[in-house]
Image 1 (cartoon, one colour):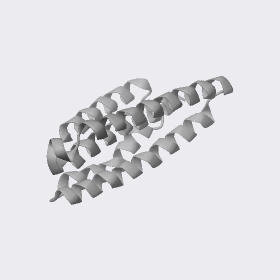
Image 2 (spheres, helix red, strand yellow; image 1 turned 60 degrees about the vertical axis):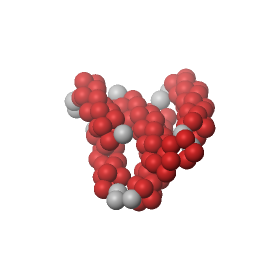
Image 3 (cartoon, helix red, strand yellow; image 1 turned 135 degrees about the vertical axis):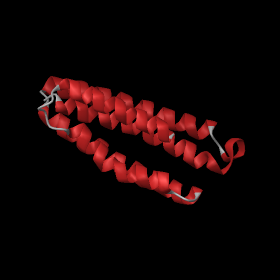
Length: 141
């Protein structure tokens, strides 16, 4: 999971640099805000500590998601806002379905106590990617 997050960070950094080097660095700033949460997860000594770190990161990601969405909406025309609103609603449905899949598939019975880490990491990676996309879109305006 640590490697997946690192790969996502590297990919996003390269993609953001191609758009406009003079644009505000929303994606980079997002990565910087998330780095302490990722470090806390990696430094966790117990499953409980790591689980708490995943929860803290999930809460931060939710705040980031809402902030990025609001800031992007403020820059768009009415038609673009309608398109983003529709896209975000579909993404939220996808997210909720993916979360349900994870909860059904990865259980304590099938994967033991580490399931909280597997599910927490997968959930955070999914939201992380969407937040990164929204910040990246904002860099284009």
